[in-house]
Length: 186
Picture (cartoon, rainbow, N blue to C red):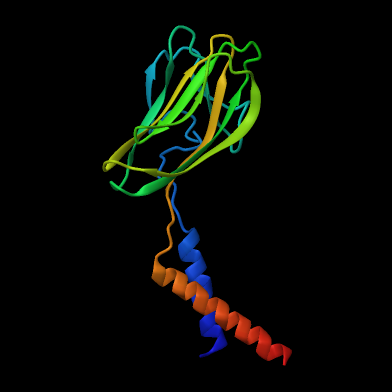
């Protein structure tokens, strides 16, 4: 078999493994507002700002003072399919009087209890969260009367589980590359 064809097969198989689209609308709040998200609870001191961001121009900040408040978004999913969820979070509170939680598809992903000390932007990632229906809520809830939580770069992508045929293509491409290298060395 032609070496170029084997190389093309290997590259295409690798691309099939890595091609995943983010299902979150306005994941970095780059619209400058909460477009795509629904706010709930206490929305005081909650907005989209430009001075404490992880990437891009905007990030969301949350500082509810009386009760929990936050945002939610219904993501179109496939029942039984796994999804990977990630986001960047920072807590500007140094008094320890804040808490937050994140959930997807009815599964609690993260709970930082009352008294959580401040920390800089930190990456949180959760893999293979199984959707129970064709619409799954992604929800972030916050409470931070003395300061703010910042949220940026939210992502929900289908979990990639390579099909046996894809793995076979990768193996075939790898064998082709090894054969081409061996032939050149001889």
